[in-house]
Structures are given as C-alpha cells and as structure tokens.
Image 1 (cartoon, helix red, strand yellow):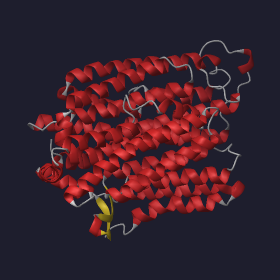
Image 2 (cartoon, rainbow, N blue to C red):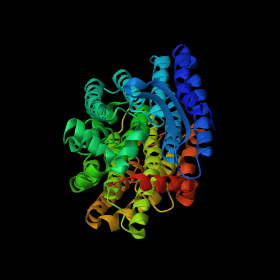
Image 3 (spheres, rainbow, N blue to C red):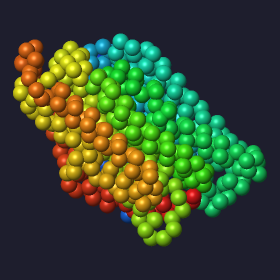
Image 4 (tube, rainbow, N blue to C red):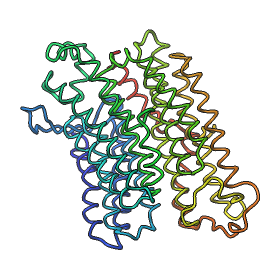
Length: 505
C-alpha cells in the first residue's frame, strides 16, 4: 500500500512533540518549531502521493470494534491533503508568532501541537467514531489556550467558545448515533455510497421514521457553528479578540476550515437530497453571512474584531458556493458551473486560512510594539517609520479584499463564476459583501498607515530581519498562488470531478 501508515504517523507526530515540549522549559518553542517543520514536510509529501484520478488514497483500514460499527479508517484526497498542508503551515506560523510567550511556555506549545494533532485527525479520519474524537480533541487545547493566555475577558470568551462548539458537537453525535442505529455503520464512505444510491433515506425511514430531514438539520447546525455561519457566529468575535493573536491565527486559519470541510466530506455526500430541499433558506443564510459579516466588520474599531468579522464574510463565500451547487446537474454547462464553484471553495479554504492567519500575525507584531494597543483610531502614518511592515501587511490586506494577482482573487472569482449561473440572485446580493470588504480593508490601510504620524509613533520600530524572513514565504505564497493557481487546482480538480460524480441531490 503506497504510504503505509503515513497518515497515522503524521497525526501522531505533533502529539509526540507536545509531550517533549511540555517538559522542555525554555526550549519548548524550539521543540515545537522542529515538530511543526517536520509535520509540514510530511503533509507536503502526502500531497505528492495523491491518486491522479481524484479518489481517496493512502488508505489505512483496521477493524477496531466492528460489532458496533467502529473501524480505524483513514484516507485523503486533494481536499483532505490540502487541509493537512494548510494546518501545518498555520501551526508553524502560529508558533513563530508566539516567541514572546513566557508564562508556562512548555504547556502553551504543547497545547498548540495537540491542537495540530486534532486538525490532522479530523482531515484524515473516515469513520465517525475516531473522527469525532479528533474533532473534540481540537476543542480542548483551544479552550485552554484562550482561557490561560487570553485578554482581560478571556474567561467568558473561552466559556462561550466551548459551549457553542460543544452544542454543535452534541448535535453531530446524536445524528450519527441515529444513522448507526438504522444502518449499522459509522463509515463516511459507506454512508455516502448508500445516500448516492438512494438507499440511506429508505433504511433510516424504515427504522426510525421520517427523520432524515431532522438529522440533516442537526448535522448542518453542528458544522455551521464551526464555520461559523450567521446566526451561529456569536462566539467568534469574543474568542478571536480575547485569544492571543497566535491562537487566533489557528482559530481562523485552520479550525474554521473544519466546518467547511465537514460540509464537503460529510454533509453533502450523506444528506445531499435534504440539503437540496433546504437550498433556498440555506442560501439566504449564506448571503446574510457574506453581507452582514462585511457590515459588522465595517462597524468595528478594534483591529482583531475587524479581521474576525472579515473572516465570517470570507467563509460566507464558501457557504454560498456549497449551497448553490446543491442541485442536480442537467447538462455539461451545469456540471461546469458546479465544478467551478467547488474548485473555488476548496481553494478559498486554503487562501483564506493563509491570508487571515497572516493578518492576525501582523496584528500580533503591532501589539508587541505598542504594548497591546490595536484600536483603529490609535495609529496613523506608520508607513513612514515602518515601511516594510506597511508594505507586507498591505499585500496581505489586498489579498483579503481579492485584488487580482493575489491568491484570494482566484478562489473568489471561481466561486462567483460558478454561483452566478446556478443562482444569480444570491450571487448578485453577495457582491455587496465584496464591495463592503474592500471599503473596510482600505479604511484600515488609511487609518493605520497613511496620514500624519502621531508624535509618540515617530520611532515605531519596523520589522526586524528575523520577522522579515519569517513573513517572506507567506507573502511569497500569496503572490505565487495569485499568478500560478494551478499549482493547487491541477490536483484539486480531479477530486472535485470525483466528488460531484458521487453526490446525489
């Protein structure tokens, strides 16, 4: 079998690093960096081993408790492998950005690595039982990272984050227990195969009655909390604002993608007909997420809250495309539109994770130089004392607003290219989100970097050499993917075609 137990080794690696980092004292950050670098190399190696036909490869399958439908089942296609690469990159960025952690550094870096294990497991598991273990595992370190190292209101923020995400997890657990009672399996691929043939709804109805729609609602709610989709988003602003910026990078760059990934890997393949039946209200919620996320960002005066609501807006584009493509394909044109939208979603997941994590990294750099100040009105003219900071952060913000030539433009273009023919009304209204987002980010550039320099910021330190070296690959990747997006799309498109061929709406 190609790859052997590569996915298992990759998932366990950060956990082993966490144990070492926990007892490494002042060397914990070095241990975490080395572990994250090895994990990134491993995830890139997984990317090179993907099957050319877009199917799931590197499969590991071992009977665990077959009598109760539990099997150790791993595998990845381009969707899962790309999320592995993204998780590895964002984790490395987070560790690099947290070099000033002095309070219990061993525990801090150990929790970050445990979170990385949860991410890796969630993106590779194909059986609900151990997928759910990893899903919950990622929640625990995130809670403690906010609770122990967050801002003044870290306690309420961590509690709200925990309660919301646990409620979503409970909904997922109940729904999949019901599926197991009816089908005797928790395997995602088996359930998706039954759904594709139409047998799943018949089996569930014969055992439990007409509950498939309710199960679909519960699963959608569980993933909507994680994305998050309005109105399930209210935990996000406080969590993003109160968490240390390196932790916020993980929340927005990687953890939010677990929700979108769940929709693509679990919800659409298993509950396609039910999602199609709810398509109109779901599209309305997606449009609200796009537009209101942007307007909420425009109303903020705190840089972290601005970028937090901007993340809601950008992930709303993913929701818009996912729900828009939930229609039966009628002809080549419809298939092409759906493929364009889904390619855009998967690329947007990666691009948003990279760009949003970079923006919060820049906020961390600013806070480090100002003693924690991050108000939009607290700055001005920083371009003069810190031109390199202004230039690199400007590139990240232009990427976020979708400037042609940078990475986010390609994914957002593909999303709208696919969604307009599928549902022009939702796409047209969502364009307002693009306009408001551009206004918000240009306002940030104007308020922070333009105009006269306040007297107390005239000696504002620019990026030092090590910061420039750390940020250069991230900014370079934004530019590279904006010019050569086929570096990812060439591998993603076969998976898109394979997924769409097996989904039934």
